View 1: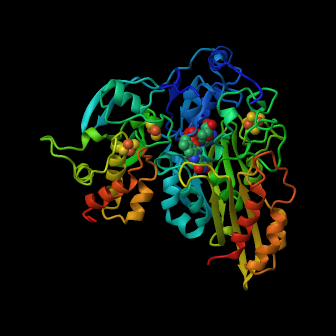
View 2 (view 1 turned 60 degrees about the vertical axis):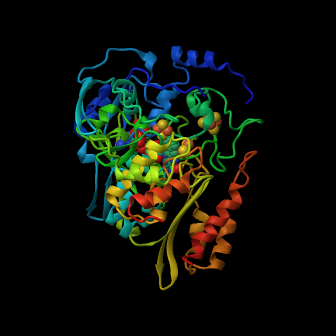
Length: 195
Length: 331
Ligand SMILES: Cc1cc2nc3c(=O)[nH]c(=O)nc-3n(C[C@H](O)[C@H](O)[C@H](O)COP(=O)(O)OP(=O)(O)OC[C@H]3O[C@@H](n4cnc5c(N)ncnc54)[C@H](O)[C@@H]3O)c2cc1C
Ligand code: SF4
Ligand code: FES
Ligand code: FES
């Protein structure tokens, strides 16, 4: 790059003046003006892991943020916070989503399932969790909650996936330790197709 | 690049009808950001590379969702998720080209959330711009990618005009080959925009990638019967099979009659700011069989007129090979 920019100064400049911002017809924050009414209510009732949770949510708050910092559900990890790793995977109405890349306000009226919601009340692990343990699937474990949630989501629509289908369904979950094959072994075991 | 945990304060509107959404879009013109699945949006806002006062969330508008048969073709609501498109029988049976393109977008989770409309209207991935640098596209007066030290392996071969960024959307490439029509709506009324006019290059508008005005919402996309069940070929070349954008992709639709190509549309992704039609190839293949030798002849025309930058010369032979493979047919 031929122009050297002090990053912090640049960002500050952008925020203050909106130079680099809002040129695409999306408006810019510095423009000011009264905010019209009818915006969303901040107090939400969410269905999380089978329980109703009342929580005060900012309009722009991501689900990962609400789960981790407002509800203490830290099993949902933040790796990249931008849709590129899968560590934050949760199920929304049984379908895997990146919690870092959805607004909590989009979870209204839906069921949210996180890794904390898998085990039974007496502590018995969910069959997918148990299979991941039995196969010694995780290495460092950071990506594991996301891999487990992606697997639970897969098995709900396809209880007996082929290894190739499983690979495809888990392809949105990176593993920095490269434990991919172990995870796939665990998926096959969890679906009763032990290798 | 600095990563923020949270987005700055933004007001959120969740209209339930198209009328409410277009009303809000008109009222908040220039101050609001239309939100579909958010998979392109949140990165911009978290990075503070762009900001907005308000978001108008379209996800709650059922009228903008779903895939249905209409006279003359099939209509897809703009808020339909990419996953639904990959699974819907009407798409799979008649327009498998679009299914194949939607299936290789990003990752499974992003396809579960991301919508067709958002995929088509997403902004370019040029990292100088994404980083918030004040380049031409951001209203400044320099292109960082097209500078002597610029990193431009991913950038354009064609149609550059100050900005050399490329279209990032895989579904745009397929919809261009399928000759789709975009239905655009606002409080002022609705209009139909042919796909070839929907995407615009920097020579037309350097800060917008589509012909949408500030207060307009993409409501749906129509696929014409004309291309239903044609012979198709879609292929995307990227660094990784998941997440990565196309370096070059190809979408081809071929109408066959008595073993010969009656008409064809060939479109490349990743080589221009818009889905890039290959008219010379389209003309050259008419009346020929779908074969190795047709591919051989047409491939030579594929990259004609290319103006490579320092690091993207490889895209020209890649285009040629993709055309060759599209014409070779199923093995
Ligand atoms: C890590 C990562 C990898 C990716 N890889 C790929 C890839 O390989 N191929 C690919 O094609 N894409 C890729 N994408 C982009 C992603 O597919 C798109 O961002 C997604 O499909 C956008 O859909 P959305 O509904 O989430 O859009 P949003 O973020 O909600 O919207 C995107 C833009 O379109 C506008 N918009 C949305 N809907 C409408 C509408 N109905 N009318 C008017 N304007 C509208 C919004 O205002 C916004 O500017 C990737 C994204 C990420 C984060
Ligand atoms: S290619 Fe376009 S978006 Fe990228 S730096 Fe140049 S002007 Fe900006
Ligand atoms: S933290 Fe959500 S995808 Fe990485
Ligand atoms: S086990 Fe370490 S990142 Fe996957």
